[in-house]
Image (cartoon, rainbow, N blue to C red; front, side, top):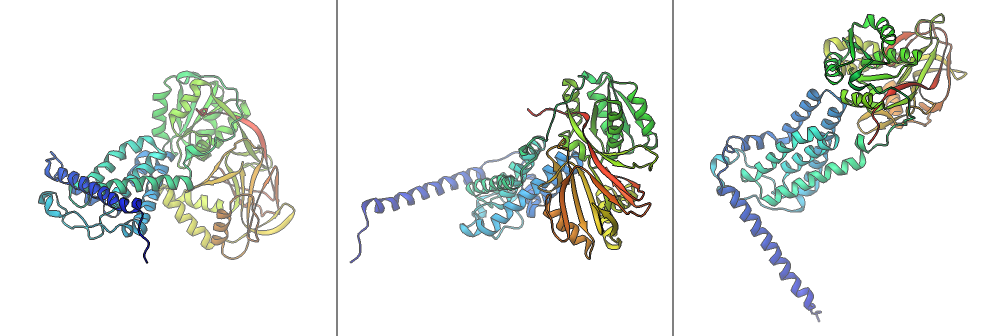
Length: 504
């Protein structure tokens, strides 16, 4: 005997059917309203915009434009996060979304022929993949850069609307796709945090004078470094009372010494090598340093939280500054009879100095990033391990990396320091053996504070490297010099005061 259904169960089925029918009716009514209405100027635009977004081509082009036109780390992060969010949304649509609800496409004849796409989609209608990709890309960009997000959002909305306008999706398809795209971008953020989600770097406060409009500030610009010349123009606009000196690389040491005797603070605009030189002068003269990112990578500036001229100008106006550690190696670049050498970011021996040298050779011809890829291929193919005595034991080494503070990986970025005044060195060693590329990759993936037969990562206050062949190349903050038979590396805790915007 069958069990009779309860009255509540029996009554719920027609209610669900009525609700589904009502929703489908409203969806069809909204679709017909769009189809029947005349949209001035939309006929030649929206179908083309819809086609341009096929396979994400529109968004890949937008990402390339953001990275190129933005010329800042924030812009590059926004472009990369937008593309990554799009990839997550597309994977979700293709693996789950299209198969979960097999809804037929709207009847094309309901839409005027002038609006219809030349090639009608053959996949199921729910949800809209174009809307998901558009929303994911726009949301990913906005999570890193609100400015670029505001630029991209109207285009993303137009692409989503075009899917209804051209008659290939119902409005509910587009809304569901957009919701999935936004969710994909936020899901990615949960796995790979944005820069704003990260804790602020260690910031012991420093004493520095407030210099509104750049009064009593002398800025030295390396005119051959990255975007320094364009950045110098922005510095003059933001700080009209500052003295700005644009000089050739060979004249930088004399220019910094001259600037140190003229102002109350020393400014620098250039890459990490130029900032390194300015930092050594500022520390020697006991002056605060103002950094304007004008190089290709700008590692030190970005770790400070300085990404634009406005960031530094705000700190100068308020007199906000922090103290940071200064790495030191002895003997310095001029040998045993010269001064100590300093580094703000990292010191290294092994394959990296050759990589820097090869990259610098090719970058004026083909650009910084392609030159870096070419240099890595060239160096890893033909290099032999370095023979050195490291911490009292002689061994073959592919790489010795000594960071000024602990480097942490942040999503697609190679690394960032959360504390610029921890008093410690981040020491990473890749031991000799076959397959340098695989060993270096394994060390990069393993990260800090690890040990294996191929690599080790520890924290130290002092490192000694002996038994070197005279003339062994080493790199510090992107500059290359040559060693004697031994090197000693340590730190000067909180030796440098740098203008830095305070977190709000």
